[in-house]
Image (cartoon, rainbow, N blue to C red; front, side):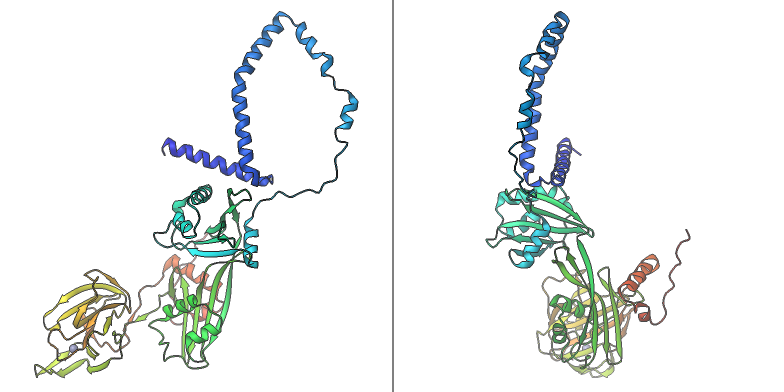
Amino acid sequence: MSIRNKLRDIRHRSRIIRLSTYRKMGVGHLHKQIDISLLMLVLICLISLPFAIRLHYAEKVISTEDPFVIDEIEGSEDNIIPSTAIEQVHEDLGDAPVEAPQYVSLDELEKRAQLGEIDVTMRTMEKGDTLLGLLAERKVPAAQRVEVVEALELLLDLKSLRPGLTFLFFHDKDDKLLGLSLTPRANETIAVVRELDDSWTPISHTGRVETKQELVQVEIERTFSGSAKKAGLPSGVINQIMGALDGEIDFASDFKSGDTVDVIIESKVTQGGLEIGSKQVLYIGVKAGKKEIHRYAYNNAFYDARGRTAAKMLLKRPVKAKARLSSAFGKRRHPILGYEIFHKGVDLAVPKNTPVVAAADGVIEQIGRKGSYGKYIRIRHAAGFETAYAHLNGYRQDLKVKSKVKRGEVIGYVGTTGRSTGPHLHFEVIKNGNVVHPFRDNKIVSSQLSGFELEQFQSWGESVNKDFKLHQVGNVPAVPSAKPF
Ligand SMILES: [Zn+2]
């Protein structure tokens, strides 16, 4: 650490101690004035020090030479205060009420926001965002932005601000920033509030944010999303559910009226009653006819109760149009060559330039012309799966070997390049080097928790849903027993 940084650090630390002391004494709003007064006092002391030293030595000289001079001063008649005067000092004190020190608190800002007296804007940090940038976005004047950042820096290392962190910005009706708050750690809320004198004070609170869980049951009437909205689920949650069940449930056809989806969601609510961030799905329970699905959201992924990430089925018809099967998988007589060959994939007849999508998450392994296949893409997926797409008219521009693609993401466009009689997609699925039928249920189970992590997941799952154990159907992998004390 350079000397400059050290000095800066010392300055920050001393400021934190001063500010918290002033607030404890109830004079937090006067911190600037007190700082100035203290500084003046120190300066006066420093300036008067040489005089004091001179006086000290001068006294010594006097006392050694002539002790009676001092005695005379101490006994001087002028220094005696008459006893009557003391009684008069407090004579005219009235009985004034005690006024509480005035400073702005985060509770107060939140309450006013709840009442609609002031506005509150929620903004989640994204990649590339800076606090200065967010303040500029909120139209805070440049000089104030620096003051706010400096105040926050007293309590928080700004380098620790990361995407996903949610800021609340409080404004008055004229768009003047009154304060901001964030919860960088589970148990700590940090705020910077504008005091009545327009200075900015950093405040740190512990345990202000409560985590709430609620169970919502969606009863399917017609569509899933319509029923979910009716049950009061926000669109963010509906999207999380649809994303989690993508590939396992066909939302258009699997649900019948009367089926249910149970959702346990978590939200974070501050002491002042404001909800921070977005609601998170913890559990999804689907009952669609005889089909039952239980999914637990753990560390940003959805797992079944046995700790496996949900199996994702490869898309069977990876085109963005209704595809007619023009040539099936297996032995057939070739339409151009005329003799019997083995057809390694399926031919899906769709109009030219229909978007072709990746059948599962994966990495582009080959992209380019490949003999009779014409323009060709091959993707490697997890669990030994590969998929191939042939006779394309073109590729999505930015794709190259090693590009990552997501399930359902466009990779190219249908054409009739190579040996082909008309626009169609020739689609192959390869499992461990062998072609398999693209229309069977090709499932990718991408990961399985094990050991300590699985143990953690299971105890967490039981805390989220009392029926967690009931959802562990099939062989449950053994969990190592707890270490003896
Ligand atoms: Zn084909």
